[in-house]
Image (cartoon, rainbow, N blue to C red; front, side, top):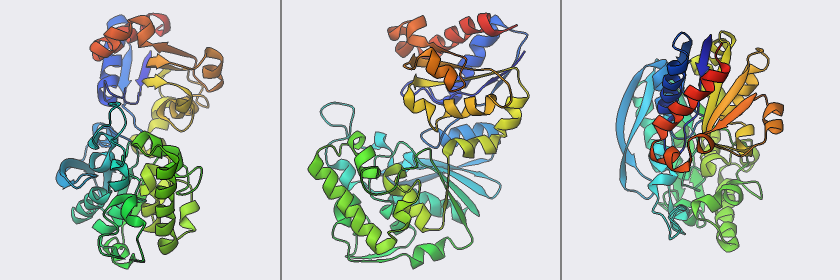
Length: 373
């Protein structure tokens, strides 16, 4: 048999590259005669650059940029031909914010001060390195500034001075905005916002109300203030663009990219196109995907649903291996997944988290006994 192994990351335990290697290793133990092709996947969030580098090659370039609260952080971007791939979470990710008392969500108030300036610096570095197309993976952000910091890093000018640099808190006092210098900086450069999120910037389905709570913007007063600040920003930039699909991605970072002439692509589609996933699926007998927690979110715009959507028309069975499975068999099959296997059910929770690579390989070894022919 020819097997395609194409998982997403197992958040908090394994990168997509590590997960793909573990599944392939376990499968080969049971079925050494099978041809296993490992193609790690991503949807634009953490791991985006590593996944593309593992498939496309290219050159990884290092840069030190401003983190969400202004501290210097290391980052890398991938230059493949004249296309650069950037992972926004490296410069403004949730993991870069201080945690609150619960140890899981950011310290209240930190996201309202957090900036995407470092992402703009990465875009500038990529252009200076020769990129004529820049793909920015959006996901895992800890910011909610509408991409104002990115615009400032690329030359946008505002009044009062510094209003674009202090997160949504600072945007509340914005009185004037000039995007012309940023547009000139990117003249002749195509921008792509790669994201599985299609929310607008403002309102009940906007960046603040939907994604703010996971960033520490929890109470109604804080949400109202942050959304109001983004509305002030949008009124001076372009209110119509605020309603476009994906404008609310990564705390509104999608909005800034759209303002600069960028287009939105689903993150999964970006990666799938770059690695030639459709052809790979058509050339195998079985597709294996997976992620840390397979739930209802997995069924919409994520790696798991994307693989299933490609496997169905190609008449290839698709199965999933996950840390935990929170969707029933009937629902899985309705979404094109023949079967799903949970690590916590097979090897136990303690083993799954304590030795994730070994556990995932052991589950794949067991699954191969059922599916390999």
